[in-house]
Length: 240
Image (cartoon, rainbow, N blue to C red; front, side, top):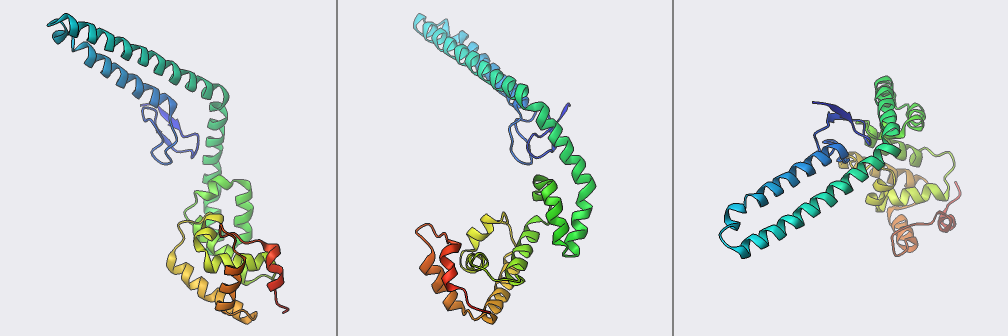
């Protein structure tokens, strides 16, 4: 069976599949073959009605009419799929194939570096590799935990506490769903998050903020969508 490379995630799979089994991206060639087989099946079923059609002229006319509709729909459908496939192949396939191959090569060369940097809390190296190939790093198994630790580090170890840091703290403490979405870490470990949340509260108490005060600031400044503006939070900064 011929193998193809997914244009989105770089996975290798049989070209008979309608879509990538790993990320769900459509495989146009496989979808075309599946669609053509389904149309042939429908046509065969309609042709099988001929035995009954001969029993009456009325049924024969009706069956012929339905067959014509199916054939017309099949021709239109096949033409549509072919045009879509041709357009994608003409404009995108070579580039997607090249990028997919480069992603595979890059991952082979750098995944071990990412693992070593993560074990050593070397976020500088991870950020550099992310800048080189963000798509590949986002598929890295430790990506979610790295983002959570990096965000936590930025909050707790900032040399200058600004309104931007206060904005991140408020999201981290009181809107974890948005914080996770904004930082691309929807699958963060809840226990790890709760432990970090407690530590963030302790760090904020050292800066003179109680949990209730932070909650009041969040409630007073979140608009109807729950978003915060860093510029509006400057008035709540305290001198260190």
